Length: 378
Ligand code: COI
Image (tube, rainbow, N blue to C red; front, side, top):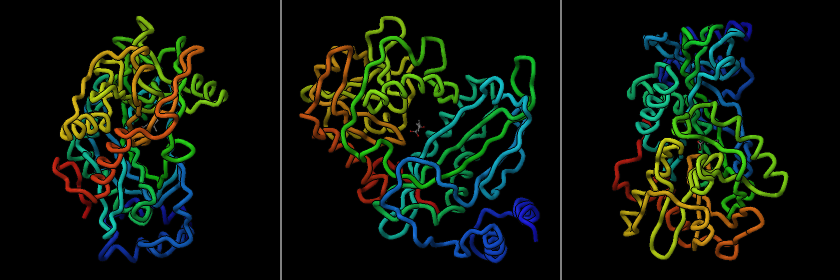
């Protein structure tokens, strides 16, 4: 059978379960696509040396719908390219939102995901802002579970990283005049990943950006639209070229209050109090951010969500970033103009370390899930 026929056969007959009667079919397809015939294990992968990059896996989930939100039945398909019209809404007018999630493998070989309903709701909110229909919470969560299970062998061994999950909602229907696209595609792909920043979980060096802004009041800074990310590449590349890890953005009105880093939220610790910029529409409502606030409060910390000036940040005892990709990452230094401040002599701060451990042991199923945040995939 040709690869094309096999791919088409799989997409027409695909099942969401890689167990039972469909296993033979999936083995045959995997063999023919030059993947390993063993759908449950992977040999020879150097799990210790994954950074944060795309490693193609076996399956992706694809579901199409119309502008009115009528969704067809979603399907698992072999991971591969999409075909869209050159005038697709996403290509021409940036109609797209995405999510980031992670699946972890426990020591006893269970697969866990973290607060998936939060991602589903954030996608619904973002889609509303971008005039797009979105899958409902149950459909979203179900699709995430199916995609992870179909790619189960790519969830790294416990303690060696995670399977990053990228749900994406894009306007794929053709449109030329400026208007919402007539057709939408919801898809999910996954990739095994290690730590986000080079050098693992070591403290990062941030540069405060004083000219370019990430978001303005009334704009889209508070939703996870694809169009928030390309504009930060320029400043990020410039900062990286000068030896920094990433860029810290300030508010667009006074150029004084801290907003977020290109890929994550920011927290500061002063004495016994933790503060983080409040969500006022220009900052991404991070799910890791929200979880860290809840976790820190449950451990007795006072946590304030309020405007945080860059001067206050520079005077903090400790600073750290949060995000799905970055998890909890300590900040070693911040440079604002000619002023460079180093925290903890560049070492990991005590609070960052405590909250990193509290979060990750929960996500990896090591500590008791008192919040009911962890979902086991079966
Ligand atoms: C995530 O943390 O999941 C994100 O979506 C940030 C992205 C820039 C990697």
